[in-house]
Image (tube, rainbow, N blue to C red):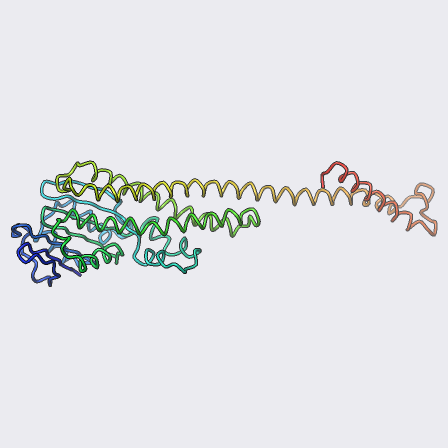
Length: 354
């Protein structure tokens, strides 16, 4: 599906047009008109119409843009930015729309954040947002519904005059919304780790370890994406590309600052996950030591009793075993066993082993 917005410098209006109104070529755009063409889960024919006829891109760019469709087993392309003579090409990895919407809900179960669509974030099914920028055109391409695109489209419908600032400003709006989507997820991961840390000391069970491992996978996936996106934003704010106007770089720096903060938070979360795993191993080892200590104490207390019972159970003459034929022999043996157990228990208490 293709959506098409155009800022008309003559009428000073930004309106949504049917795809039939799209010029045959981007070279036909005159004056200060600005176009935003968004492709959501497009067909191969739509991709050819926009990326080969309307705005021809390099074969490598076209291959990177269509990689999720052509090689679904390989997943999305990692974030990057490349400059070509006619355009600027950027790839980023936003959050899935359903996870971004879920994280923004104030009354959800925090446990569901690390568990919802986990694999979509960490490897093969993570979303890919590709963008091609020229002086007058912004083309965005994605195969999944993305919250950052929907929010930018709604913003543009309310504040259409902002489109006159150019494709670089429109793309900044997309990046700003995309980065803000990470905030509630990162915050809920941190809160979840705090709760797991408290529970870990009470109950270092395999179930807790399983939750820690799921969080580790999520944190590692987010960290990889955020670090690469931080490098992309760092290049955009350094003034390397002519298609990003100097007066718009301050907005990109604001997005970059937010991204740096979230990257640092997810890095702290990664370290905390590693610490929790070490703590779990230590707690489990300590719990096992306590169990083994208790069993050893029980065995040591019972061992003298077993010795007495074994002696009185041997088939020897009566003269070798005291009171073996006495009417009180049984109670003598029981009393002796209890006395030896009490002495062993008292010795352990005296040494503060129990």
